[in-house]
Image (tube, rainbow, N blue to C red):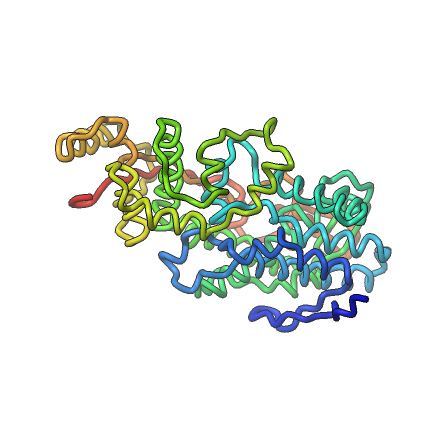
Length: 409
């Protein structure tokens, strides 16, 4: 007889004690698929800029579940009917919402598997777990996919003011030390309500929402789109690209069996079977780091230099501009690199490249954040607020960047 105590608590540096509310959720947390999240950093290579940013997807998922518990309690207190089955389903859906992330979170998305998002992989994991747990995740899956008849429940998991954002802004702010991103998640949740099956924020919470959107904008410019993080992640993408290229040319690269599989095999939506999912579940940050530690000594000029740059934190120079960068700027850097190291233009393009970054703190056409006034009137936050900057925050800001080597590779 299994007498294991499943009513455990976690001590979280953000919220204090987090309780596990049911044995099913305990078993999901114990599962190898979920434990893998301990080995996947929440913020990719951002620790190269902010040394404290070593927190994981595991931390984040538990934090989201804790905030969902708070939200359910608040909504029930305000008369919103949420039964026990719906409560557990909401907690499971938010707990597993990021389970499909690959190594280094967003940095490696679409690099290991072609054209399959982490949300789609999360859904695959949840479907497999549902079979393993005798259909006990069916309601959670329905809510996660937005197919449940009570729309506000999906909004708690995925919207512009969901438990995911409420946790990651506060958590990432804490671990990076960037105080501008620190939002009062508990205050925001206390102000939530439901009207006509839609999630709303009571009038008293308007300033908390303003702070939340401003914090999101600042965190994107200062942390998520920081130029050093940006160039490091671009190099990481190119490491995998070059490794795949060499593998398909017949090179045998030293790597874990899981990583070797994805280097040798082209996987897309159609070929992403349950067997592939199991192999994907064996991948984490450590596979990539250990591979790069070996590949930095490879005879291939491109692969070895790309890996050395990340391992030694000797990255490319990056310039961010408000206007598009002229083609001549790329050409001059490419030509210089080709001549200096006697490499082809294709090889030089691994070290000279550019792109765009976009920051939009609030999207007015995507599940608006609605404010509920005491009169019963419901108004979008942009119209409800007297904060002039909020209109600006709803407009996308695009910047352009170019990366190229410093003195020498």
